[in-house]
Length: 304
Image (cartoon, rainbow, N blue to C red; front, side):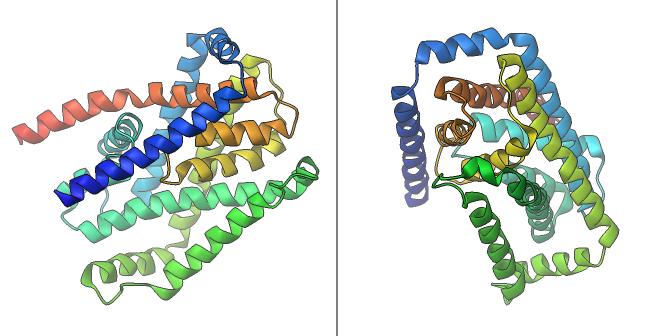
C-alpha cells in the first residue's frame, strides 16, 4: 500500500511540474498562434516524422541486439521496443519503457541481471553518442551563447555525464550482491568486444541524426531556419533535461528548454513552443503501433 502511495505521490509531483511549466510558457506566448502553427504543419508532415521515429526505433532495436549475450530475433525485440515506447508515452510516470522491455525480455532470457544490463547499456550508449555530438558541436556555436547564463550548460551536462560514468563503472557499487556482480560481469565481457561497441556507437549516431532530422523537417515545414551546428548543441541539452524524471514525458520542461535555447537565435516563443509540441506529437503518433504489438504479444503469451 505504501509503495502504491509513493508512486501516486511521485506522479502527482511530475504532473505538477509539467502543468506549472506549461502554464508559465503559455502565459508568455500566444496560445492561439501556437495552435494555428500546429494546424498549419499538416497531418502528412506529422506522419512523415512519425515514420522517421519508427525507423529510429528499428535501428535502436538492432543496437540493442548487438549488446545481448543471447541473440533474439530482431522483430521480437522490435516489438518490445515499440511496446516500451507506447507505455512511456501513454502511461508516463507510471511505467517506464525500459522496465517494460526488461520485464518481457526476461520472460525468455530468464536472467534478470543480464537483461537489465543490456537494456541499461543500450540506453547508455545512446547518451554517449548524444553527449559526444553536443560537446563536439559546442565550440562552433559558442558565439550563440555569448552573454547568456546558459553558456556553459552543454559542457556542464557533458562533465556530469562523464563523472557519473566514472563513478558507476569505476567504483562498481553493490558488486558484493550477486545480481550486481553479474551486472558488472556483463560489462567486463562487453568491454572486450571492441567491434560490438564501435558498431553500437555507430548505430547510436545514426539514431541521433534521425532525431535531428525529425526536428529539421518540422522546422522546415514551419518556415524556421535552425542552423545544424546550433541544433547539434541544443537537442542534446533538451533531450537530457526532458529525460530527467521530474515531469510527465518531459512536457513543459522540453518546451521551456526549446523557448530558451531557440530564443538565442531569434526564434519567437510561439514558434519554439510549436516546434517542441509538434516533435512530441509526432513521437506520440509513432508510438501508437506499440499498442498493437502489446495486444498481439499479450495474446501470444496467454496461448503459450
